Amino acid sequence: MNDVQVSADGKTQTKQVGKYKVSVTREKCIGAGSCEALASNVFKLDEQNIAVVISQDGNTDAEKLLAAQSCPTNAITVIDTETGEQVWPK
Image (cartoon, rainbow, N blue to C red; front, side):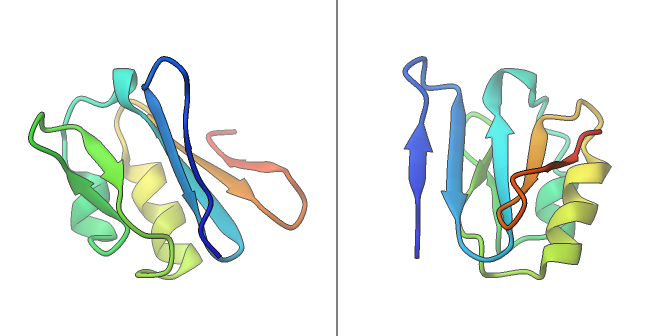
């Protein structure tokens, strides 16, 4: 199941599949690329060198969490879809 949401301001993008839902807050992203390096089937840098979520099921939940934790600006939010709890950033 995919759930795609883009905020009215167009700055937050979300896609959901599996236990963890990841979101990228585009205005915080500086294009470091660590998320893409660690979970390349979930994240990629677009033509503006800003991270986007391309899939939720390409990497494991552990890999998605590690990729989010590697972001130097905390631009990636991880939500546990079973509990609704924000896993990262804390």
